Amino acid sequence: MKHLLKTATILMGASALAVSAFAMDAQAQSRAVNLILSPTDADGLITLGELFEGAGAASGVVVGRRAGPSAVLDAAQVQVAARRAGLDWANTAGIRRIIVREGGGAPIAVQSAMASAPARAGAMVEALTFTRSLSAGEVIQPEDVMWTQVQAHLAPAAGPQDAAEIIGLSARRPLRAGQPVNIRDLAAPQVIARNDMVEVLYQDNGIELTITGRAQRNAMQGDTVSILNLQSNRTIEAVALAPGRAIAGPAAQMMRSASTRSNPYAAR
Image 1 (tube, rainbow, N blue to C red):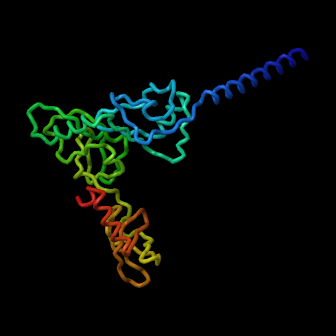
Image 2: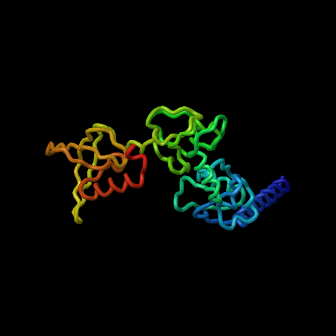
Image 3: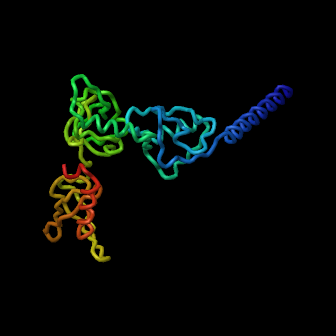
């Protein structure tokens, strides 16, 4: 019996050493990498080498496909794929999606010219389409769109040339799977609903005041919204920032102007 216990102890010790050695070996093989700031792809197959600096032997591992001028990858899925290939990407910046653009600019220009040219019978063009049906108000996620071949006359003149332009916007009306993306069908997502209690920040020349009031209508980010001050029973015009938050005063007007200039969907 003592002999058997001694043998079992030796085997358990050897097993623990083997596990420890394996863990140390795996850690030694894991290579810390940094994400390339503006990753590009030339052939439609997105690899770890095109996403990370110093990918080494894992450079050829394919983690996504690009069928148009750009592709949007889920950062968490890329992180898992990199870890499996022996790469350690910490993602300390908390990046949620990675946009990979075409390596050369010529094909994008060609596509733009094709889209704006008169449609020929039977001609096919690349267009951004929905991968699933969306309800009104749903926010567009990276996996909700993809580049596909459609008949030229079905491609909208107001179609986006880059998937990154529409990620994070919401559907104005129900949209069906396979339908080409039309920017007129999209808007900034609603952040305030009518009767929501909203905290309004007033800023002017270094002065900051905060009140809480009731929203008089629905508002998307960057929209002007009327807020009823329940204490004074007066209405304040503010700009919606986020759920339950708005800003008023000169800073709000500047933000509204900047939002309209930077977001072509805001005025649609």
